[in-house]
Length: 303
Image 1 (tube, one colour):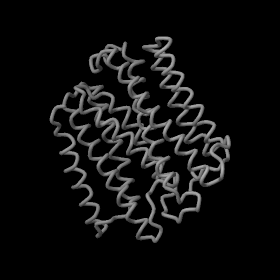
Image 2: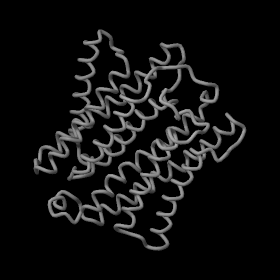
Image 3: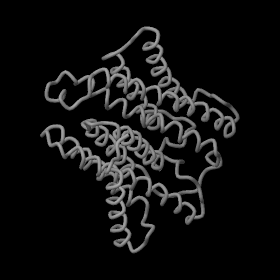
Image 4: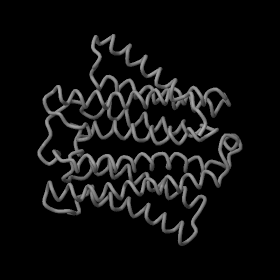
């Protein structure tokens, strides 16, 4: 892997932004929600710069977009740690993975991290446009819709299995989000304007499949750890709660895609479309079930 300047410059930029915010708020631990709000716009700015790089053939745009994206990712990590510290200051002391707001900002962290570490191996960076515009929407939902207040945990959430469940699920979701973005580009890859910015189709297809495998592994662990947590919290490994049911449906979609690839030789547009459908199922599992269906899971409200 080549030495990359982008993470180093991103670290410096995020440090400057954090220092400016700390000076403005007159504390080295500014409210975590302010940092996450800033990250929403950093991710959006990165996505726009990547988009300009693609549409206007601005070669340096890929580099600048990457630096901005790294700054957002590192600041996202800072903010997560700051919120963790502030849960202790509030007297509750928990890892911030326990409500809608915290899961969303962790989702953003996973999407950005997975993409950026993969991007280090790329010469072409057009994918960042869709990835970071999507990520800014995730963070915007957290910032403008979800309740960011730090509150005491209900007894069912006071479990290390919850932490394992959330981390594994969102590592999978982050990979699926990136696979979705690359699948969209694969489906558009016959466009001559776009084609010159993309790797060969076989490279794209290979990445989509490997990313799907990575996400499927973590989603599988997420379902297993969730079942163990459910048994501890509610006395049953599986109760066909709407969230459990749709997680299983999502798992079946990706499992079916992997099976079709290995046994039936699926490739090309079939695998790309499967990842689009799979990610729609992920979004419904996360958002649709929470707000349209009632169940045991704690993310089903905005507070």
